Length: 287
Length: 287
Image (cartoon, rainbow over all chains, first blue to last red; front, side):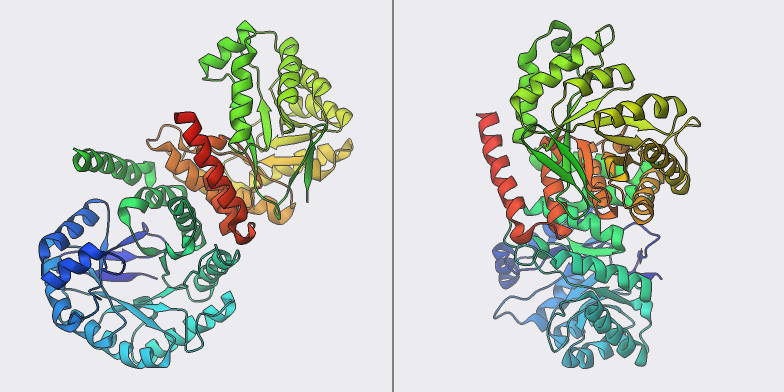
């Protein structure tokens, strides 16, 4: 099953037989004061840097979140979307909990964007799926519902099934729904990552859908988070995840290595190309 | 199934329900000129450093190889075994292709050592299994035979079965045979790692035996080998590998992270302890 995202000029295909897709996470002011200030001040130079740096480091798609308290997000998101679309041919992922912000972003986005996100919560299903359908976009479905995040893989699978059914009912095909099985921190629950990995395996086996992962929650509260996040991404890719909203600068090399190890990179050509590119970027950024 | 190795004072248990076991690889002069010279000169100070550093960085067992061209290995290995046993309570893994060297090492080693290795080759089965049996040791069985290293996971499984049968026939139980599925470099064959991962899964499913991995071959000839080796170890652990002959300094953190993610480290206590220990070692080694 292939999920196809598009800008005006480029197509990105997400699928288990394809290279893993990196959705750059850094245009998100949550816990990022400099970006929050830039958005509030309308300083687009800094956003431009974030776009260019992520694309240079291997982001295939760019996530855009403009959630700053007090900011008019509905007015802001089209501006940022247009800026990003003017700088890169990477497709766009619109990231908001507010359906009006998503709608405003969808109206401005070129090609076929991704919406982040819907969940099994009734209100979100009702508010988000119709605007996804109307725009012909794709959507990320989080495996949580009005009762919260289920503890077991089987229950998360059931939430995914509900989202897929509700999407199908209004005409969104399964290939345009990417399921995110969610992950809690292993610091407080030693089985947290296992449940997510099992959910990924069940999703692949039962529905064959694409699976997204937000890879950094897993290490919350722990030291040496990068090592944990790297190992988790490799494990999730083996289980069947096909894309991640993540930091290409920190995790790009691990993702290319796992693609190589999982047999998706003949003669290691993409791995070696990425290494050379990263080496030259490191030289430029430090020089 | 548990493989139990022993020194005079310590037991190390290898099993899928236990923390992954690190067999320190650094007492091996292959491609390591300084150690080759130290062995030739009988300079045991450098070997002492290698022992202490590996144990400090988390080696549970120590591999000992004294293969230097021109050196009398049969005379040398008991001396190094005795030195290592005097410095650490980590059990010993005797590493040689020469059965006489293995026998000399086994005679000197305390507790219950590990022998590295036998294979499906007739000559090696006939020469190595009896001395393993006589000493009550455990042994690593490589999935290659007189025809070389098989291309498919099923064929490697068949070689493992042959080794297990031949071991059982002379009284070595399956829990004392650790199978090494071998890995070739992904640089020349993009399916090389996949075949090894599939072999690990088949070994776990069919025989439930412990599985060892030499993790660094996989990246031979590639740049950024550490990233590839880290990702591969995580994938192999998920597939069911239970120990690795590897470098604890480079790969210890990834192994502890994968143990944590695979649900084998309640409250991340071992991961956090390892991080603190590594931090203090780094400070000491750089200061």
